Image (cartoon, rainbow, N blue to C red; front, top):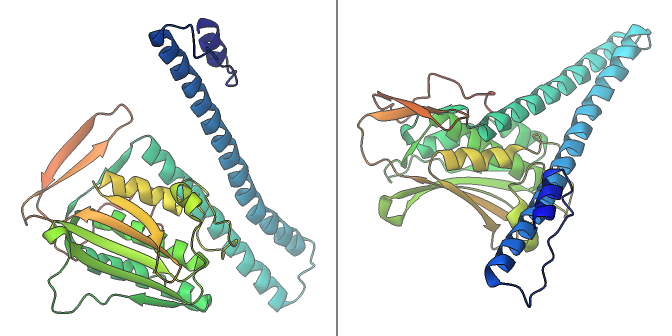
Amino acid sequence: MERTARAIAAGDLDARVGLPGTDVDDELAAVGRAIDTMAAELSRHRSLERAFLMSISHDLRTPLTSIRGYAEALAEGAADDEESRRRAALITEAEARRLERLVADLLELARLDAREFSLHPGPVDAGEVARHAALALQPAAQESGLQLVVDPGDGPEPAAMAMADPERLAQVVANLVENALKYAATTVEVATRTVSGGETIEIAVADDGPGIDPGDLPRVFERLYTSRHQPGRKVGTGLGLAIVRELVAAMDGRVDVGSTPEGGTRFVVSLPAATGEGASTSWRTTADGSSSSTTTSSPSASSSSSNPPAGGSSS
């Protein structure tokens, strides 16, 4: 066990204790199995990290190649008419924005991993936040020939007041809608409701795409996860669901994924309902685990945090 531990510390994650199941003290066998399990998990995480870096490298290289190609064409005079120059400029701008978005999402994940991000929770109308965040992506839906159906939230039911950061909640909804736009066949639906006797607010985003294989469900919130069924449309960066999971957890909620009765995919964000209109607490978590808090008056249902989220909104 000592030799195996030293080998693992030196970087050999294939090292194993390999104690037999017989003729070994139970406590020693348990320690040996724990060391082997730890080594296996470390090896798995290293493989995931390598796959993540390879995917990021590919996603960075593709737009850079396009930008360089069009820049060289302009410099060499290959784009010798106004229309060609305009097309080169538009494509270069689009690819630059794609790079900017990817870098912003990477920075956002780094802040979330380091627990260096700020939240300003308070009572917010979750339905109204979800509606505005989803409708901001209406042009992207129309460009893909898809219908984006958003619960109007203006019926006789009372507002679905959740305890959340409005900017971060809008970011969560935007990322879920972007993901749905990748795989939907015709329609993406966004709806908000109050459940559990008024104690929980749910925001659901559903698409009528090919669905997710049950074996892949535990992996959908991994970074750069993509469906095996189809490559999906080029919407977002592939990091959105990982960001969603981290932000929802930071707001004391959870996010679940499952299949719709028609075979599509449905994500559900569950957040605690706001219990009152009193003061709310804002806090910042730092890398060392310490936190600071300040008490402020509660924002109105339609207000936004005065401080934008780190890394910018994903919408």
